[in-house]
Image (cartoon, rainbow, N blue to C red; front, side, top):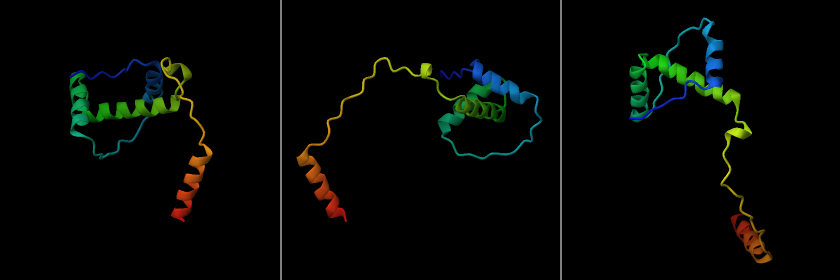
Length: 105
């Protein structure tokens, strides 16, 4: 199974380092996830000598850190995309649309 998490991403490391010095209370979180995802997280935890809870917490922190970081324009690859020109509705189509809307009332 090839399951790779990019833990070396600068934004994630900075966010995790900021939280290291703070004392946090531990709480229980019960969530339903797919068996496949649970197995991936369990395998990752086992591979890195971590507990399932510690890895889950780490992944959640990374997810929230990435949300806070936002998406930058350079992060999006739109090199091979083009917007299609959409033709406006003609008079006949507008009339048919109005007729359908009147029927719904």
